[in-house]
Image 1 (cartoon, rainbow, N blue to C red):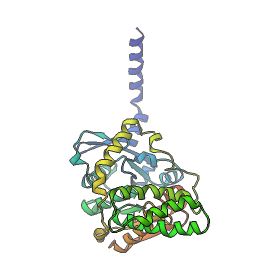
Image 2 (cartoon, one colour):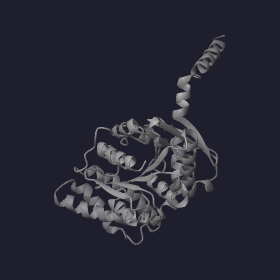
Image 3 (tube, helix red, strand yellow):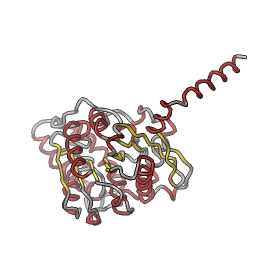
Image 4 (cartoon, one colour):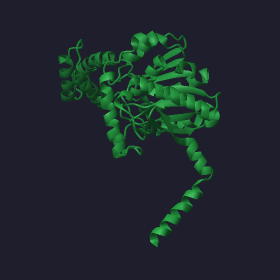
Amino acid sequence: MYQKILALSLFIIIIASCTQENTETYERFFFRTSDGADLAVEVDGNRNSEVFILLLHGGPGGSGFVYNTGEYSEKLESDYAVVYLDQRGQGASQGSYSASQVTLQRFADDVYDLTLFLKQKYGQDISVFVMGHSWGGTTGTYAMLHTDIQNEIKGWIEVDGAHDIPLLNREAIKLFLEIGNTEIAAGNNISDWQEIVDFASAVDTNNITEEEGGQINSYGFTAEGLLSQIVLGESGALSHSLVTAPTMTLSAYISGMLTASAITEETEKVAMTDELYKINIPTLLLWGKYDFVVPPALGESAFANISSTEKELVIFDYSGHSPMDTEAAKLVDEVVEFVELYK
């Protein structure tokens, strides 16, 4: 008897939820099927602006929904709609597909497909901008170069994006040695910096192994934590663990790790700097001055090689890898100015 009452109650709740509120939920959160993957998408903010910023998260193995918090997201959403995508095999995205469908080309195609779908869903006249952070800079740049997405969007925003891994590793080693030795001489965190400097000194930058690349990434985050020049803002948007994020169930965490493992061999060889001349749409490059994870030299290289005459490189003087955490207000100001200019 209790089970019947419970079932009836659940049925009534389901019927009651099919209201305007439920419609609004559908407008905000949905799954987009793309070549075997059900991509989780959340659209928050001012859809009436008819400007949509498609945000590509870091990782691989991360979640777009982790970015949907903090001062920078609240400010952006007050002006525009922000599209938080969980890329295939990551976060809340689901699906059944083979390892052959876990490639940079497939990730790029997913981004292009979602861009077309946003126009279908919200109107062909909307203005779409793509904004990629870290690993999102890898997939976003690949989409710019290997799909027709440049014909569909108004601009490309790269935030500390990893579009050239060999260059990234070489420049990180330089940064470890330059700033590490300066910090040691100043008597700051000597033992920690010495460990990093000793590692960097032993690396053959002409032959960096996959294992060394992983260690460079790890030391990059460690180095940022040692610098007093980086002042963490109040938002803390990306400072919490992906494991504790609302979409990060155990299964999502595991699938993210598997996806990261599957794509590592390809991404470790990614070097798109020589192809950047193919990008001819308005481009905004945003970089932390003390980013050891993806050094600002990559931003400088991108600025020099992108063929668009409508491009800008902005360096954040008090930031490392995530200026949306450390200098949220300035990041939003730069993005808004860019969007207003080219929407």
